[in-house]
Length: 413
Ligand SMILES: Cc1cc2nc3c(=O)[nH]c(=O)nc-3n(C[C@H](O)[C@H](O)[C@H](O)COP(=O)(O)OP(=O)(O)OC[C@H]3O[C@@H](n4cnc5c(N)ncnc54)[C@H](O)[C@@H]3O)c2cc1C
Image 1 (cartoon, rainbow, N blue to C red):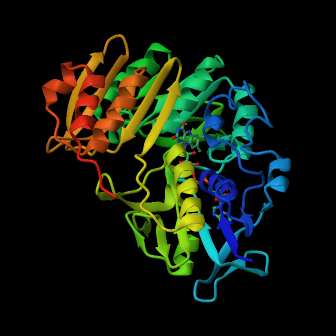
Image 2 (image 1 turned 180 degrees about the vertical axis):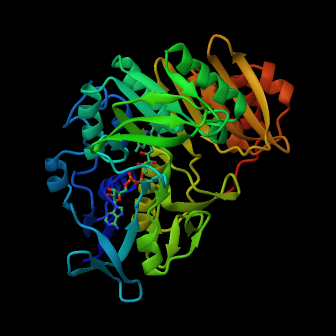
């Protein structure tokens, strides 16, 4: 009987395992994960779970019974350290090996550490359910949180901590938070939103010196010269994709991840998805690596479809969202710093969208509290047709999309 072995029990791994059954795959499905918990909904960890609004088992993606009834074997606390693709075998950290017919890797990443940060009891990072539980308990007992890094995780934790009534000091090395992901103007809007919620946002600022009391950080001196007290610290400066195993297996590394083709394949019988996949996206016609939940789940489902039904390009556009306070951000596609931004909607009222154009083609659309526009924007990206900037600013978007669909040549056959 064919055996699919999935390494990683996160977004990719869970989606791939259960989608294989949905697609009628009848062979063995084995998930190996170094995590202590069965697959859970990671985005909750900086939001509802952290705030104590939901608890286990609500964070789990599937119940234990689902694993039994769908015949998905799950081995937790199990790290895969290497193996041989030629012999279709992977090695486990604590001895033994597992053979496979098809291998799927969804390995995610490990929170980056900063070189001078002390390993004190109240200095935390956030990736796993365990991390979130530790942070949640520590947050309850703390008064002032020092957050280092105003990326999505940092910004979401800041919003959650403020909602819980904690004081928050948010230190960001860049002049504008989220600038790399969202551009300067939207980043500034975010900084404003946090300031309005009484987060002390210090941009273009770094921690110069940590102050310890016993095994705890009691505060820090910042590069703006000020000395700040804190009884809890979260370092949220991004992840390093987990590439040790792909490296050991001799998979092609590129773009900060594992290079996969349009169908998410890295080698014969080996598929890679999620945060570690550097995917040649067939619609955007360039390779991208995206660290977002819906992308990871979509990759998992796409890989399952390929295993059960034959290789095919994976065409779904990257999509992510972020909820902070009552602001809901959605983003489709992928822009770069050089793209032209076209704004539409009510910027002051925080209900707007921004389209990013390159050579007239829409590459991405970002929306704040403007879900419908975001969805239509996705269709404009997929059309790969040049679109006039003034039409984007003013036209009825539904009509624009309908017009494009009516004039798009249909594939024959
Ligand atoms: C707190 C938090 C909040 C987030 N919120 C959002 C959000 O709002 N929106 C959004 O789009 N994205 C969000 N993300 C990002 C999103 O969760 C990730 O992009 C997604 O989980 C990636 O899925 P993955 O399967 O690639 O990796 P993961 O979900 O990280 O899963 C990787 C799995 O592989 C296991 N593993 C790694 N190496 C090995 C090995 N050698 N052997 C065995 N097992 C191994 C890990 O233990 C883990 O189970 C958030 C992330 C975090 C941490």
